[in-house]
Length: 160
Figure (cartoon, helix red, strand yellow):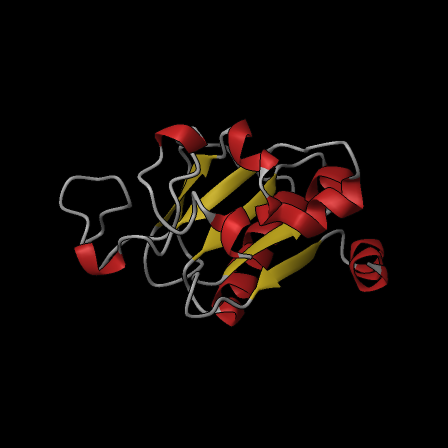
């Protein structure tokens, strides 16, 4: 936790990452944006941790510069594809998915948004025609947990 606190003190936020394995894809999320900039925390899933860290830091830089980040926003200029922002339903905050954030903030659950990447055709998870080969790499956290299609993300607490 000291490294997280040091990052937040120095930069304004930190990125915590879970490397992923044969059970679950990797994911990463910010800790400190809410505290430092009154912005939402951000989460991203299914890409290499190094890429997600760069993307989350880039969005964090925009928030730190005063640019709002809201559900429904489209993010261009960060990577070759357009990213989108989706809300995170509160039911996901009851999982261990954001363990470092939960430990840092204690009982407080800051607002969180999901940065979502498209398939090669520009479709996002949940869109008609989203390529099956990318299914399950990103949870659809905008859905209540009980409405999410069964899979690794709905069982994350039993798997970790």
